[in-house]
Length: 111
Length: 115
Image (cartoon, rainbow over all chains, first blue to last red; front, side, top):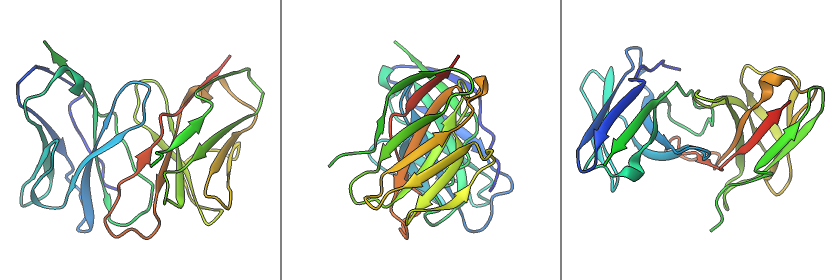
């Protein structure tokens, strides 16, 4: 499974757009990119998943360049409740259940 | 629609003891995966159960074992507890054979403290 690298921490203010970039230089052809969010004392929660180009849902957008060696999670107009740890994961499609988590990015949103 | 439920929420044990953690998957799901999350770290995959059998295993010793019941619920057992086993234990459920790629549903976890 491809290794990912993302910033350990980021700070932002309410109402700003936050972009968290993840590097995955050895991503395989059949790997998808998935982002999870985790609040303290809770399990991770699926945010968004993509394979290439751009994916958007009600909470975030995911931008993936053509070479797929990196990806950017974009959170529009963050609020205090978006303070959490964000994990970038890459892995093959299918229900393997075995996700490889890194340390994640701790996002602190300030008022 | 009930999500993933885990019990107990908190547990305190002493070194050498044994512990059993329980998980009920999300309604409609048949596969359960267990993760260990140490403080400040990302979750680490322990193993996965489907059709009452262990299907995949991470890099954890045999002290960690599990079971899945016919109703898809699961137990995680840890024997001969070590101080280093103190962590948040997460259960994640999914549906085997999904074609829409990985989207695990996690419970809130069991916080285990070993003294």
